[in-house]
Image (cartoon, rainbow, N blue to C red; front, side, top):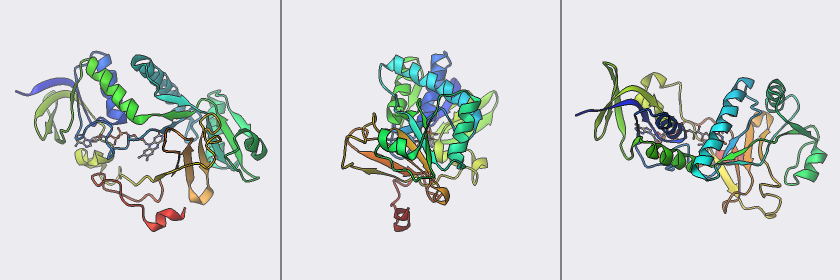
Length: 291
Ligand SMILES: Cc1cc2nc3c(=O)[nH]c(=O)nc-3n(C[C@H](O)[C@H](O)[C@H](O)COP(=O)(O)OP(=O)(O)OC[C@H]3O[C@@H](n4cnc5c(N)ncnc54)[C@H](O)[C@@H]3O)c2cc1C
């Protein structure tokens, strides 16, 4: 017999785990299905740190969504009695006319968000690990910081289960068939009927939604970790999370020392090199190390 649900959530990374938890909390009869086991390293939601900020330079229209997200993260922490979001402040560094600086100023002004502007000299005194060029500025968004993504995924799944969600792991979904009153979800081991479906399969999305092929193309994200020679200046209290505009070289982001891994630095979108999400951590080639 095919089991019936109000909603099926396919993929239980950061997005799917949050969706399944919020639906279950509202009393919706929901099933969550993932091809692997939670917080696995092939997904985009692995690791200990993801940058979060309110003064979103990309577009001010994201700010109300982020304000709501902050509320939700704090509610999650309260229910779990665990830290998920750590506020360190976020520094957005660049030339005054860069998108990062001008966009952050615009978002903060429009939404009346607190923001501090720091010159290279002020930065040297306050956050000595950074060295700015004379024509750069740093904008400190005091409410920015980082999320612990694996803890968030596990926490959402824990709450979803305790609120009655059915969670299936190690079960790849192979097809979504539209039909009478909803969809039939076909997996390697079963069939389920749901009135609605949320497809949150991240980099794999075009496997189940072929219309997205060519539009949602997974690309390689390269991050690296460094052990600081001076551990004091890279503590979260002395080193906010940062994003730095590097003109034609794109933008870089980084985190203070969190746990034993040291300082994490990455280049946003890197070379936009397509990858196969089914292949574990592709090797970083020589060209990649030039930046
Ligand atoms: C290195 C790196 C750094 C990042 N840094 C930041 C940052 O600082 N700030 C920020 O906001 N964002 C950042 N991001 C982006 C952010 O992490 C992702 O947007 C987010 O984790 C995506 O979550 P997701 O649930 O969409 O996808 P995923 O976490 O990839 O989850 C998708 C899930 O779907 C499952 N799945 C796939 N196909 C099937 C199927 N057929 N059947 C069943 N299950 C299936 C997978 O097993 C997986 O668990 C970063 C991403 C990366 C990779």
